[in-house]
Image 1 (cartoon, helix red, strand yellow):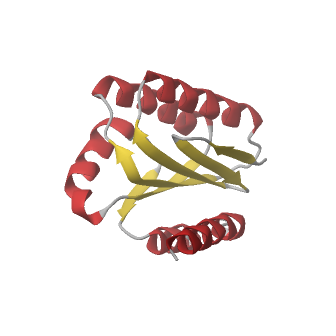
Image 2 (cartoon, helix red, strand yellow):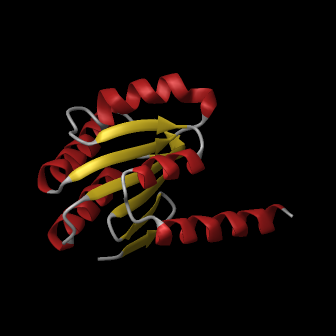
Length: 154
């Protein structure tokens, strides 16, 4: 199964048994509803027996706790429905402690997946690779995205 979504608030990729999620800006009820719908679609169509995620929250502005609880409900549904083993989360070093506390208090509360916080995308990918997840397509996507960013900067 493959999922590809790009809009102003989310970039979502599901290749093989790894999902990539980048959240941009502050999330509101509409964003949480979109996230919930995407999770429901993934649960309905996903056929792999093992699943991991790479979540880039470097551009996330922390939402209201009620929105975060709705997001948690969707992640719990994912965790309860699939064999969700590992979750690598990337945050900015400057906000590490605040983000880590918020993520575990709201987004990932009571989630069964083993989660680790990273400040570098490369380290998060290495960690997931150590568990045998199929990262080739995600890495190609990320390399292409990083190359486009570099060209814009030049």
